[in-house]
Image (cartoon, rainbow, N blue to C red):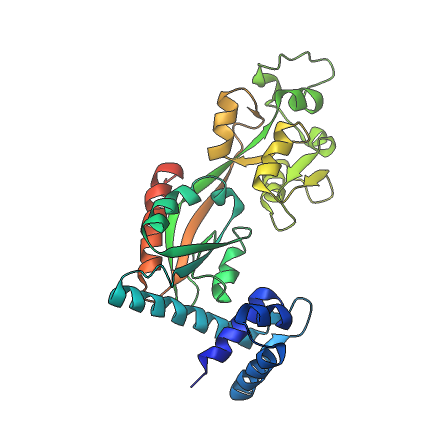
Length: 311
């Protein structure tokens, strides 16, 4: 039988990134934290932490963290069934989500439900192609991901598709995507529809992060380009990413929920109307009977139905 006080110490050390900070959170001494981790490692017969800066869990440590997170969720549901949601002991629901969803449809889907229950929302933001790793490691109870095949012990539900449009300001398009002999009107987007590789090699792009491969896939699929053939700004913030495009720093791929209102207002134009990228999104969660994950999925699915493409 594992001591859950020791498992909690492991979880806090990893979440805080070190023993000293964990001791402050747990209100015990650093040596007491070390002793709990040592007892747990002796129990399982393996090292659970890599003593780096910050401290990270080993593969075995991650499996124990997942088990601890699942037990926490089930215990919180048991408390809710016995005493109703207790505001003095609120349940924390950890979800991994991609930045574009968070910036658009995700929070409106959950706001009402979390307001009605004594729950706390803890979000971990990562690229949609990586969020499932956070679920696998036990850092989240559910995730919005591009991974359709459910991981071991998990279920996968289709939410909808985010469509990405290649956009820029009319001023940026006139500067980089018009022929020297052209004198295009900024309100006439037809002059920019025949974009070619030579132009894209000179025009700076705006890319969300080094993990985000969407722009790379777009240029490979439609223009047969490989990394190193274009220049890019890297801006890992959904708000600042879009602002950089609006400020004519570069062109970029923007989700339809953000792009279309700006196109309708004439702030941005779509550079390649016949060339878009579609990214299906799925909700993956643990196969445990927890009220929280069930209600979260229902709320996400209802909002996704009206915001994401369903075909």
